[in-house]
Image 1 (spheres, rainbow, N blue to C red):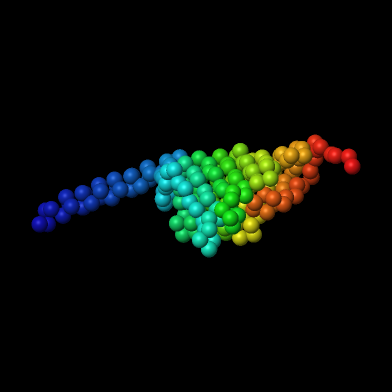
Image 2 (cartoon, rainbow, N blue to C red):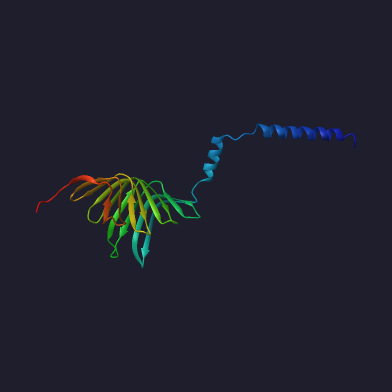
Length: 187
């Protein structure tokens, strides 16, 4: 057995040297690390051609349609709508009071906030139309608002502004830094 001892020591030395060589040669390629972590940052749940409704006292108050929805963070129920969505708001008689569409949206359930981005359009029952690139609907406050450029088309003219705030049905609204073309009747 004593004759085997130098052989075992040599094998151990070679294995230790190989391990050190491998560890020294290893380095993190940032692109490879990013691609691996991006794969880990995927949706928890996805759905196609989704329609959801929210009701109060048995009456539909909001209906949402989207070609795709992804639940991003299960712990706080964050939902992404990468292919856009449509929201319909209803009154207590079941009539649509406003309609919103956007090319992209994300919903933060914990905060009760929807963010709509890109080609955002809101119409109300009076026929007023809002066009903007960014809009936030706060479900709890029952408001919609933006601090970006807006164009509001009404029966009386077109109003441009650098933001606006309105009730969630887009009936009562206020434009920031408003300007535009209006039809004025003389009495």
